[in-house]
Length: 460
Image (cartoon, rainbow, N blue to C red; front, side, top):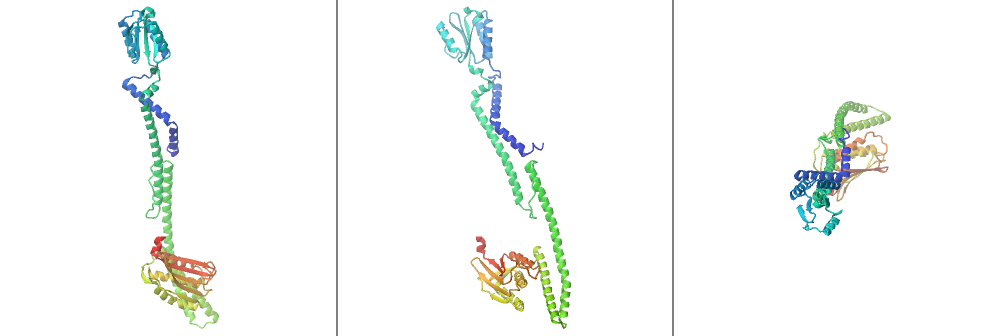
C-alpha cells in the first residue's frame, strides 16, 4: 500500500500510459463510436460477413424455389434485403429479359444477350461489388437471379467505423493525448508547487526567528519530507528555548558574580590604601603598586563583563544625540593624558576638524569605546610606549585613527581576558551604525573608527 501512495508509483503509471496512450486512445474511441453508431442506427453488426457463407446460402435458397413468379421472387428479394439492406438483387429470365429488381443503382439492359451476360460475369469475377449468380430451382429454364453486395460490407466493424468516422476518430485520439499531457503537466506542477511551498516555509521566519511549520496533506515522499521539516522545526524551537533559558541563567550568574566580586575587591582596595600609609621598603612599595594595578585590571574586567552581558541582553541604556565629536574626543583625551604620561608614553595627537563635526551617537557609548581602546593600548602595547590619535577625512567617510607601537595583538601580554573590551567596542560601534577596522602586526596596531557618509552607504 505504501508503494502505491508514492510518487514513484504515479510516475511509473504516467510512463506506462505514455508508451501506450495512442493505441489505447484509438481503440477506446473506436469502440465508443462503434457502440454509438450501433445503438443509434443498427447499421453495423459486430458479426463479420463471410463471402463463402453468403454464396452458399444464396445457392441453397435459390434451388429451393420451384415455382418462379414475380410475387415469389419479390418476396424472396424482400427477405434478403431485410438481412442485407445495402444489397442489390435482380432476376433475368431464360429469354434474357430483366424482370424483378431491387435496389439496383446502375443501369442494366432490359434484354440480356449471351455476350452481355458473359461480359457481366467477367467484370464481376473477383471485383467489387461481390456478385453471386444462381439458377432458380436449379433449372436453367427459370432463368437466374443475381445478388450484389459491396465488398466494404465484409470489412471488420472497426474498419467500417474508421471509413465512416475517420475524422472523428482522429480528433478523439488527439483529445485523449492532449488530456494525458494536461494531466502530466498538472502532476508535475503539483510537485513543483509543493516544493516551492516547502522552500517558502524555510525562508519565512516566525516571531522567534525560526521557520514556520507547514500543513501536510499527502503521505508520499514530499509529505514525508514535510513531516521531517516540521520535526526539525520543533527540535530547533525546543533547542532555542533551552538555549534562551541557559543564556538567561548565564547572564544572571555573571550579574550576580560581578556584584559579589566587587564587594571583596573594594575591601582589598581599602586595605591596600591603608598599607600604602605605612612605612614600606622599596620592594614592598613595588609589590603594593603591582597589587593596585591588578585591582584596577580586575575592576575593569568585571565592569567589561557586566557591560557585555547587558549589551547582549539589549538592556544597556542607549540615548543617541548629535554631538561635536572633535570636541568630545579632545575632552576625553585630557582624562587619559596623565595616565599615558605616567607610563612614559610618547603621545601624538592631531585632530583636524570634520565637515561637519557632528555625529549622531551616544556620548556614553562613544566614551566607552575610546576607554576600552586606550585600556587595550596600556595592556598590550606598553612595550612600545607610543600612542597616536589622528583624524582622517575622505569622500566616503570621516574617521578617528588610534595607533601604537606594541608587538601586535597576536603576541602574548600580561593582561589576560582583555579581549572582552574589544568585543564591547564591536557591539557599540555597530549599535551606533559606525564601522571599525583593526590592522595589527609585530610593528604595532592601528584601529580606525569610521562614520560612513550616507551617500557612500547607498552606493555599496
